[in-house]
Length: 378
Image (cartoon, rainbow, N blue to C red; front, side):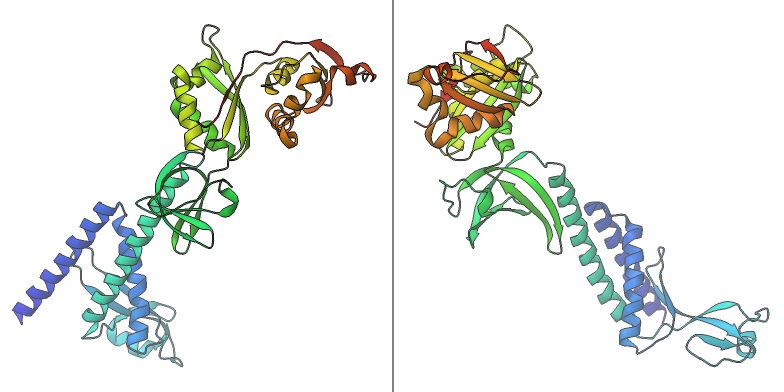
């Protein structure tokens, strides 16, 4: 008999040691595990022993033993034996009970240990899984608006699933560069748009089309941006085709455009290659709207810019021979310049402008564009 007691105690202590070790390794508060196991044991008791009683289960933090107690209210005459106990019967347990007291009577079944051990194991596994999912969620949620690198695991219904090691990310069709194809094993960089909690764990939603991807690639590639000397003021993208980025330097001796281009164009070329040969115009930002608009229309040269600051509307005059370049194929250059600056831009050739009257609310400024740089795939 003594050996059985010792053995039970050994099992209990072994269970406690395992539980606490798991708690420490996984970073889970052990009391959370104890509470979860106790709640699960109540359900297990009722399911396995056909009891509708109001019960409480305790798991000893010292010995690892389980105890089941029926919780009953003392009444004069018990009508519901499941939840009530008569005063007369209660007094046989303890002579100072009175009507209204709540008492607990141990009802631990002889073979409850097996059920309890199995239930505890299931709860611990479940809680560890939940905790790991929680930690993964926190890790990636803190990295929203950042770049990650992963391997293409599979493609299903045009959704691309990227293996990140601890979890996977999904690249939906809307977030894919139209000119790209993705195959199993491809290593790609993507921008973390959102991290969602789901029943199957955290879902990391990524993008290859988000302007933030271009911004973060420059931040990673250009030391002057990392050091805070050069700042990216705005980004406009038509993914897979062309982008514009406006940069500014707080140090007049540092050329912001040149810093982003790099020696022989190596810095920007690495980004172009990463984005599937997407053309990138790097222009200088200016606090003067007219100057900034002129720069944004690069590679076109600009003669003058008229601005209405109240309505953020501008009219830009370019040389006749530069009109198509300023507008761009299917209006792309003008469209990206408008996105980059936040201004509505109306482009006219010199001959067109000569035949039209200018809005009286506009101020005409003759400008000369700053030097810009256009990078494209080799």
